[in-house]
Image (cartoon, rainbow, N blue to C red; front, side, top):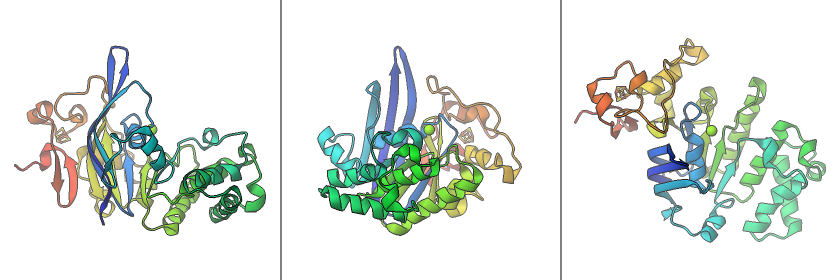
Length: 316
Ligand code: SF4
Ligand code: MG
């Protein structure tokens, strides 16, 4: 399958007075048509910023460079007007917090219908009836009555499903969801997994970028897994091999920190994004670090069809 999205050497710096925070520091990433890519990593590793960059939903105090090709068009070069046509229609964003992301004073049905009126030129009546169908599809019953309600009348899980209904209403090619299981208990997490399985069933050409620190959740849904550390993608591997045999020492540490794998904490703490370590950004925490790791930035290289940024795999 072809690539829907290709991110090339992306850098995103936040400028806070004299301080420059390197939130995304040279990321290369591809998302294929129809695939689910889960982006994992500790909080503060740049995952959300990467997601927001794809939609150019970043504050004004950022410097951004590189390219983000969506269907061969560089999103970073598109004028805002063109971008608005893509955002919400071809690329949908399901935000982290369902409680604050719906408009409290508008009926839920209207909020699901609105993108269809805006992007698909549907009239209010047909958009409303499509919205009711979508709410029903995502398990919000009885959908015709629920569509007339306001967000505060919905539970947290229902709000999330309403946001997903809203995000999928225009049949986007890519959905980016930020931490969809954050603050969700274990029982309800099963529902979130089902929700995303349902989204895929509704449209198998759809690509999903799921940003999550929840590895068991990623394991349930991922076709491929990307691992972020200190603003960089340090590994992209197929899900079949990743969870049993991750390549990068940081990925191994993440997997070994899971309760099912002995709950071994990752030693040390995440590095500063203002002054990241020289060489490999993981070297202060890596048990395999050598002199080369401390001085030379490892390249992002292909290894058995997967990709890894680590000198251990660099056999040149
Ligand atoms: Fe560890 Fe060196 Fe690989 Fe970095 S490049 S992860 S320090 S072995
Ligand atoms: Mg985040």
